[in-house]
Every structure is written in C-alpha cells, then in structure tokens.
Image 1 (cartoon, rainbow over the protein chains, first blue to last red):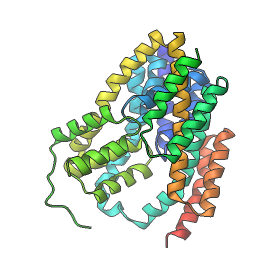
Image 2: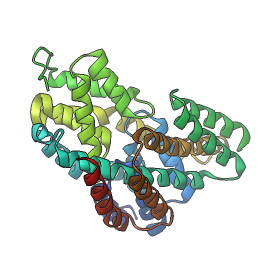
Image 3: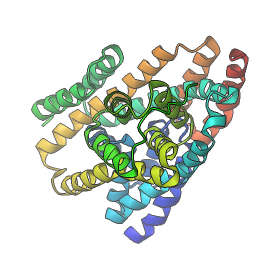
Image 4: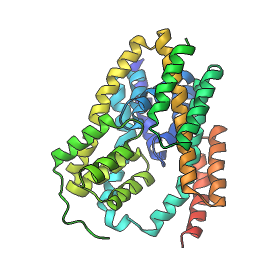
Length: 175
Length: 182
C-alpha cells in the first residue's frame, strides 16, 4: 500500500505547492480535498488533529505536510511530501532573492501584494472554518474554536495560550 | 535606501545556528521570532531590510517563513547561505515532528490523548480564523478588495477547486489593486 501511495503523495503536493500563494495555510482546503476526499488517507478529525500537532509544535506550520506524508508512507513519505511541497517554491524564492534589488518596491510587486493578499486571507479564513468543522464533536469544541478566534483576533497575547487552554478543556471534558 | 555597510555579515554557520534556534523556539508562527532574532537581538538586518525579505516571501507561493529564510540566506551568502538557513529552519522541527508522528501512531487512540488533541485541534482552528480576521483588520482593504476576499472565502467553503478560485479572482484582485496603487 505504501509504495502505491508515495507517487500520488508527491505529485499532489507538487501541484499544491504551486497554488500556495499566501502561504501553506491558504492551500489547506485543497489539501483536505486531496487527503480526505480524493484518496481517503484519513478522516476529517484526523486531518484537523494533524494540523493541530503541527501548530502546537515549534517551527513553520507547513510541517503539517510532513505529518500527512508520515501517515501515508512513513518516514520516507514525510521527507518526500516536504520536498515536493517546498522544493519548487524554494527554487523560485531563491531566484527572486537574486533579483532582490530590482524587485523590491517595484510597482507590480505592490499591485500583486495588494491584489492577492485579500484572496489569501479569504482562503485562510475558509481553512479555519474547515478545521473547526473537522474538530466539532459536540458543542464544546465549537465553543473553544469561537473563543480562540476572538482571542487571537482581539488580543496581542501569545497564541500559545489558546492551545494550552484547548488542551486542558479537551482533556477534562471530551473524554 | 541606505545599504548598511557598517553591519556585521553573519557566517554560514551563524546563519544555520540562528535558524536552528528560531525553528526550535518559534511557537505560534516563525516570522515574529525571526524578526526579533535578526533585527533586535543580533542587528544583522535593519527593520526595513527584514520587512522587505518578508514581503517578497509572502507574495511568492510556498511557506512564507521558508521563503523569507531563503531570501535572508541569499542576501548574505548566495545559494549556500540559502541552504544554511533552510536547513537550520527545518532540522529541528523535522526531528521533533518525526518523534511526534511515531508517538501519535502508538498513543493517538488513547481516550485521554484523543480528547486533548481534539481540544487542541479546535483551538488551532480558531487560531487560523483569528489570524485571518487580524490580517483583514490590519490591511483595511478597499470595498472591491473586501468583496473579492469574501468571494474567495465563499468559494472555498462551497468547495470550489482552488485553481478555479485563483483563475476567477486573481485577475479581478490585480485589476482593483492596479487602480488603487497609482
């Protein structure tokens, strides 16, 4: 099974990487479609939990891709999925870094940023809704998601607090 | 645009170790930690220089934190600098998450672990939504761009495939932005 799943894993994340304008989170709905709906590698809740693990651990939250890869094809899957997701975009980032002086502050850069960022924000909001519905087993997880949204939006405190409180509430009330 | 000639250029080793430390301590998002390290703690980059690297990193496809690390590494030492930063950023979290993944395989189904993870998953989902709200509040987009962002949200919630979302909305977004940035 693992051999058969490695190739779709790599090609899937390659395709996703090129669409990931606005970063790794914006592409989560599409990742969900591939992982949960098209290939059935895991269910809704398992997907939301893997994202939660990547978010709770230090480091870039694109690491969720590595966790999915691990689930599908073990350690090889983890490395292959990360390489597919990050390889092509890294080459692009390197190319742009070489052109830095010409690129920085150019009008088309500002147009691109201004025009694309609202789309990215909409996609990120949709990712949050998707993850919340994956975790929504009853009213308590929904309440936790809502409170966490407000906390992160309206305060400047470390977002780590919501993860700690969520873990505690879950451990006590969701058993 | 003052090129900071007085600044110290970190070595490849220092860059690797810097990102290793950032990767292992950056709970809840790398960018804030990277800025603190490079600008405030070490003074290797000015505020403006970091913002520039981050801006390019966010506009390009791919993980913002990784793109920014590559930009910073390239600035100091070209391709090998970029490799040093990227390797440093991922080395720690990769090992840590491999451990987490194998623990999850063994213990993920225990009732207490399941319950705690569901709680964390709900909170993390809220973090993502809260981040989107915060970005929207800070950005204060014009009315047409608000409409485009909300349409992107609606299309994604209705499970329209992302290539179609981008094909439909990117031209509109760029057009609106073109008119606004004269």
